[in-house]
Image (cartoon, rainbow, N blue to C red; front, top):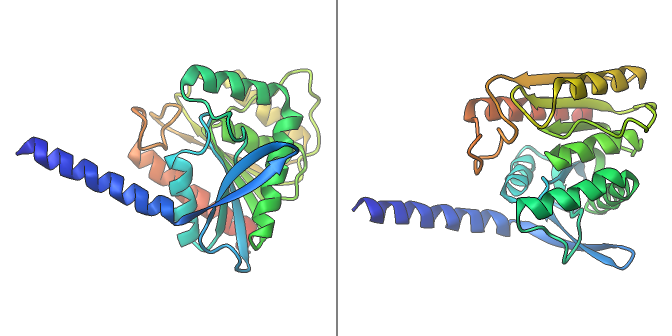
Length: 248
């Protein structure tokens, strides 16, 4: 009986995820000859504020999709960027680390892919826009600020916060929110300190929330490190920031 109940729950969960995924429309675009496949919310075409979502290091995942659907409910057009491109989506952590590392090193290529995705968000009807990113996408949110892309604000959610030490700090015109898990072993305190120095030197309007007892992927329900209490708080902080930079 218990097995049947578990099967039913699992089937229902998959069904709900499938229905949710169907509410996101595929968008094909390109970087030169590289085909890119993004997703946009069903309210595309309306005159609304927009949010670009930069996914984690394995590409477009369920966390990014759910964020897009939740942002649509909050009144935003959301577009999920395809950074890697068709045929380049990693299937395991090793491959993800390799390709994400390439874009962290070649940050200008990363910035270009983000800019192309922003163009698609604008084409979908978005007026004023912001960027949020998870993990590798959190690094991308900071790169959007460093590139001075035309966005009102960026949010890095358990993102990689560092950049190569040889890169000079520059002006950061956009507002920045960092949502940082206190026990993120991939981001040492020295990296946090360096980012604070960078933001101060860039005269940025910035803030950092640090979430107690939280490891790297604390916002992802599919992660063993998921912290539902802190994830809920982080999402509320996300919505509050977006409301400030996009709707006021």
